[in-house]
Image (cartoon, rainbow, N blue to C red; front, side):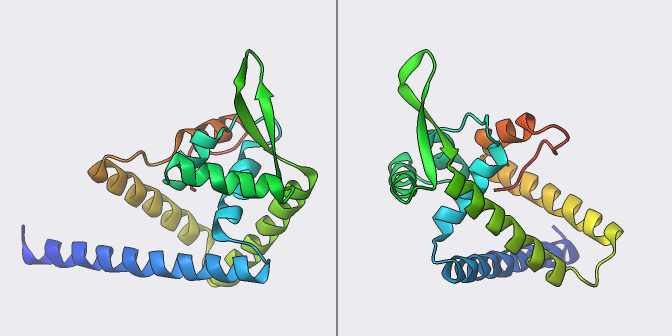
Length: 175
């Protein structure tokens, strides 16, 4: 490998590390401002993306958040207790449950969407639409490359199904 390529790759790795920290800090700030947790926000956004008829189970939540199913189950139970999520019995399999936002959960998800839109408007105020599209394409390419190198799916199955349920939505929905 030549030095120029190695340096460019090192710059990408460094940028990804910085971005990861920034996203974590931003989401912690949003969670704190809304008396919430990052897990609550992530699950609410996932279920919101699945829509009213989404077929998302605890296993899908675990896959999307990239956590153990026991962790996802505990987090979902907390949201059920808070009244943000409800479990419904799956037709034909009384043991299986789908998750859906309650009215309070949908209001919470709507609030999160509005907050994230404001943050995006502030963050990208000086960007043209073309720059935004190029950045989105580049980030999607980066996600796909990292996922391929690590053997992880770029997008969890629940996210792909959620996108398919929403007419006109992109097929790749980031977590």
